[in-house]
Image (cartoon, rainbow, N blue to C red):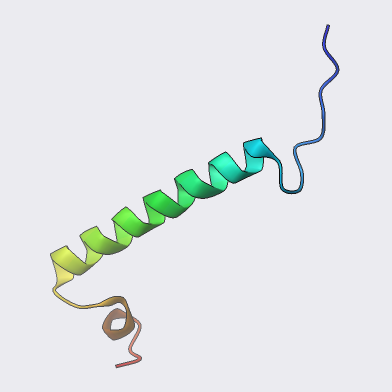
Length: 47
């Protein structure tokens, strides 16, 4: 049985998930702008 290594820090595992979640957030942000017709700053009341 292989010994499991820690999944903390700048590991390939962490960077893959970081990239995936960043892409997901970007797509959700674009979809929200398209559906509401407002940018993110307008939605937050900053503009």
